[in-house]
Image 1: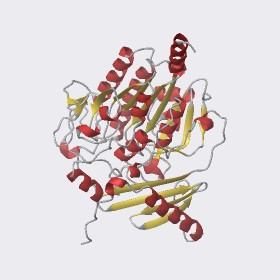
Image 2: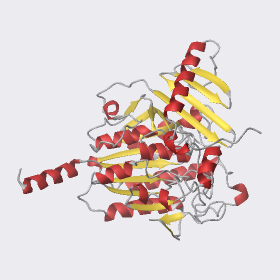
Image 3: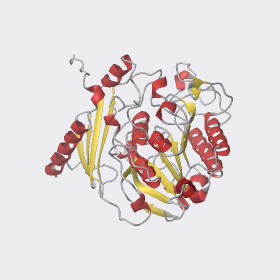
Image 4: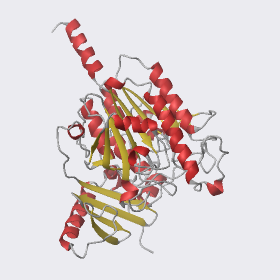
Length: 439
């Protein structure tokens, strides 16, 4: 092949690769979109996205809280492999359980660069990469989005922030642009959307891109447009009506963002990072954020890719956040440098393959709280601070009937699978950690 022919072939290959967009909501309930049956929130932009693509009815977050799920998304693997990220990182870079506290004391609390990120993999394959929104994978510079392969980063470094002052509960400004704190006027939802749109407008049109837009909405503090800054004492309080306005505001801005995307050659994903909090709607599922019950880990998930995914379709495929990473890499024809835990969902979403049974695991640690769950097919074992419950989700999606006494063999199998998974995902960087003796 001549040099001209080689360059033309390379240019065609790059141009034919799809653009990739991932939009993440924060603490959005599994039933908080009108296309998921929500009666009091109108989300026309996301409803239109679902009408043009596939809507998952059995999608899960990698974890019931922020940082761990984001780790799963960035790496395509169980976050347990990274170590210290089984709970949201606390305000001011605080570890919230023993292993995380130990890492924080050593200046190592965050997603290590050794955990190859999807952004770095795509960048190495010729993609332009940008993140506009909540990072929450480490406050220190060595854990920043830019170090993980994003050419451009703008947003909230920590877990939450006042939507107008852009500060966390301790008063620290956490609005950053490419590693430096910045001051901006405006509601965080608008700042995130505006920056993502500006980046889309300015990018080289000939280069495929990966754009990650993790909104902070509708995470607390509950502040809609026009609300005053949140009072520290009421940071986690608020009414459903305010929450509704925040979700609808986010939906409007998502609609504007999607208007700047080349629909024909772009794979778009929308999902939440975990189940909803107090003011959200996880109906009819049990419990919510920070638990391993269905309400804590089930999420809305919508994927659109015209010509590859049938419009207006739904799938009952059991899916997890880390599957999105595997799916995006497959769509971009990028081979990861190491085995992923996630599954490529494209065959199922395109209709070429029927849904396949999955065996999945969850773990949550905070202070002295320890929660686990294991799902194999329709059977799910939950271990909540030592209390066990077994459910057949095919007949008991609401997890109302503990059938562990009737099916001890199923419970034992799931226990064994869970124990084996814990050992298999044990992280190397926690080998020297020594638990404190019990009081």
